[in-house]
Image (cartoon, rainbow, N blue to C red; front, top):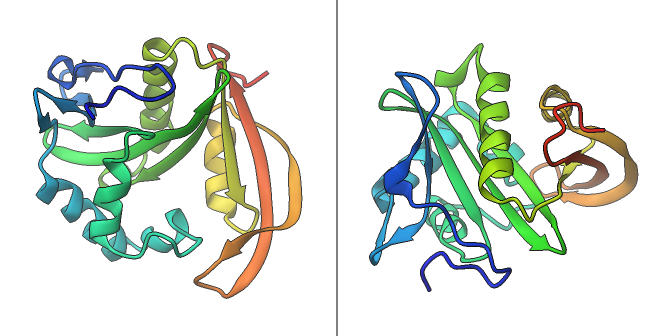
Length: 194
């Protein structure tokens, strides 16, 4: 299936990448004319980079995604809308939406070391990209482990409003415990999340 999703959304043409400045580019990850917009080896290398930078277990905290090959399969699921951020040829972030239904979607973010000092700016560009290209989405939701304080600060800096935390909702497979799940949202077109 080309990246035409059951929800009725059609991914933007990655050949028309969204240029943010002379050096910043957002590239949607989609199948165009039978080919993925980024090579499999690139996605696999980012998963290895996540391990090296120590972000793999915090992004895939529930233990369902345990290998670079599983990351590649996740990105290629037709129910996901991935986008990759670059500064020049250096990847700075990957993010994806899923769980798209009834005008809402769940967001997932991972930034890389090359984004240091610019993670908020890059994240805001990704959210803006989603809001511009997927207009039927009225709200983007987040479900974040309550023990991931860095991620919670990050989503707030992107304009998400934290609603609250449900105790012992999420499995943290790497610490072998149940942790609270913090629910947040950002309404489309509202940089303050309200």
